[in-house]
Image 1 (cartoon, rainbow, N blue to C red):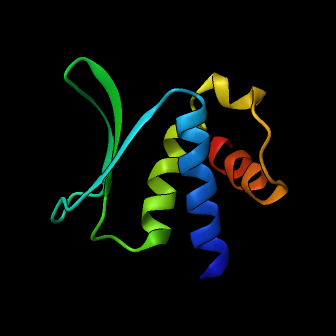
Image 2: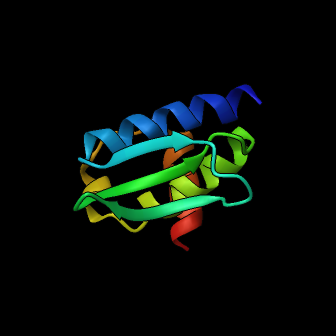
Amino acid sequence: MDDTLGLLEEALQLARDVGQHVRQEPLGDLPGGPCVIGGRRTILLNLESPAADRLTVLLGFLACDPAVANQPVSRLLAARLAAVAG
């Protein structure tokens, strides 16, 4: 679990570093994902979901962002991003 929480925090910081706006809110049964709020590209994460689920949603979004490739990340996060990117 510690790896998951650490990776989630690192992924959240990475999203901010590449200019993404991330909001964590209670979303009921919805997992979250990318959307546009007020004209701004935003990643919504369900605060009620386990950290592992929030990380999965966030990694799926970050793996598609070309700006992520230019950012320094831990080996563990790089491996997770590569696995998601396929």
